[in-house]
Image (tube, rainbow, N blue to C red; front, top):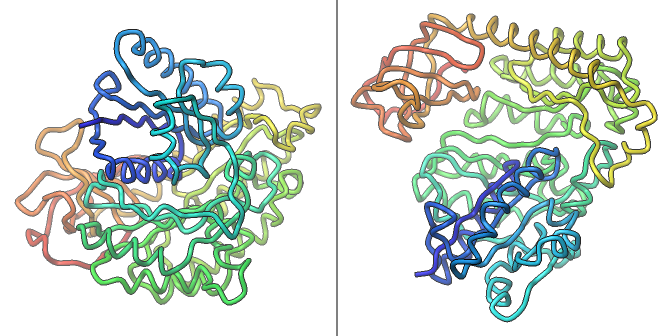
Length: 449
C-alpha cells in the first residue's frame, strides 16, 4: 500500500489541515509512514506567522530531497509558507513535485495524482460562495482530543499578521457540518473538542441568518458524550455578551480561554490596528470572570513592536499584573513579508532592548504562574488522562478543564481518556503534581481548574 509522511511546522490550523490530508489520502489507500525515508509521499505543511517554521521547512527539505536520487518519492510543500512563496519555492526546488496553499487542501488526492505526469503549483483562493470545507475525519485521531475547524481566513488587518494573505478572507463553515463532525469524533471516543478558527467570535456574522458563535457553542455543547468544549482563537474586540453568557450557562465549556492582547499600550495597539484599548480588554476580562470565576486566562504578547517605548512596555507589564495571565506566548516582533508593519520599520526597536523586555516579561509571567498554581495546593481537580509521563516511570499526566498539566502516580483507573480526581500536592510554573483520589474512571464531571 502507498504510504504518506506529513511533517507539520506551525499552529493548530496546520495540524488540522494535516489531519484532513491524511483522511482524504486514506481513501486512496495511503497509510501513515513512521519516518520520511519510508514514505512514498512526503508533505511538509508549514506556518508562516513567525520565521522559525519557515526555517525548519528548508532544513527538512535538505534531508528529504536527496532521497529522490535513490528511490521514487513524491515531495510536497503545503501550508501558509507555500501560499506566500509558492512560485518562489516552485522555482527554487525543482525536485519538489507539488506546492499548494491551504485553500487547496481539499484537492490533495487529485493533485497527488497529477504529479505522476507533471509538477503542480496551486496557490489559488476560492471564493466565499465556493469554498469547500473538507469533512473527512483524521484517521490518526487519538481518541481523546480532537480539533474541528469552524471558519477559514480572517478579515482583520492587524499590521503584524500575515494570515489574511495566506488564508484569505474569512468564511464561516455551515453549523450543521461543524456539529456533524463533532458528533462523529465523539462517537469514535473523543471527549474533548476544540473549535478552531482565526477569529472564532466573528463566526457567522457576515451572513444574515447564519448561527452566531454563541449559538454554535450551545449546539456543540449539546452533543451527547462530549465532556470538554474549547475554542481558539478569540479576538477581544468581538467577545460579545452572548459568548460571555455561555461561560455562565454551559458547564462543558472549558475553564480556560486564550484571549490574545498583544500589547498593554493603547498607542501600540493602535499601531497594530487591534481596535480595542487596554481598558476595554480588561473590561472583557472582568465580565468573563464574573460569568465564570474559575476561568484561567492565557494570552499572546508581542514585545519590541516598531515604535514601542519604555513607557509602552511598562503598560504591558502593568496589564500583566492586572489580568494575572496564567500563561502566555510571548515573542519579539518578527517582521513578516507582505505585512503593513514593514512600513513601520524606521521605528524598529533595537534587538538588545527587545530581548531585555522579553526576558523581563517572561520572568514576571513565570512568577505569576507559580503564584496561581500554589493556590491549588491541597485542592481537588478533575483531570483528563493523556498518557504516561515522558520523564517519570509509573507517572501519568493529564489536563484539567483549565488546561493545566497535572502529573500523578498511575493507578488502575488511569487509562488514557479517563477522567480522574487528583489532589494537588506540589506546584511549579508549568505543571502540578498530585495524588490520585478517585479509582472509578467512569465518573464524569469536573472539579476546580
